[in-house]
Image (cartoon, rainbow, N blue to C red):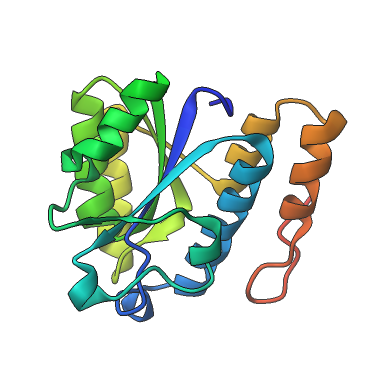
Length: 188
């Protein structure tokens, strides 16, 4: 992935859904780091909200980093034609997915985008489900179908590409941030 060939889709991180999610604080923290990295490096970003009348709006921690989310009733974001048309218009062949829930909207989006010929990446630590088993099996299923499962830190370094220059200066603080539990994110 590079900043010019990848879009980040933030899927359904909503106020009434997030409290039900295991590791919700870590998911939001990692999505926030991805969004701030994307903004500093020029990665295209889009977001969705699943049936916002019932599940609420995007959580306040992420909303300032996102343009108006696309409302949807379909589980797969690939069925939101404005999202796919935007990728086509921008000639972006890769989509990085983050959000909720891994085994429903994220998985269906990933499988549909793979079927459409896109390269699909999952930020495994920037998504989750209500139950860990659902999350893990969805990651495994998408990987078996050809998707790439990775982590927020790997993505940020991949977008940055080299350990010097302006891009690295912008990404480094995101890598060094403390996790929601107070530990340093960078274990090296």
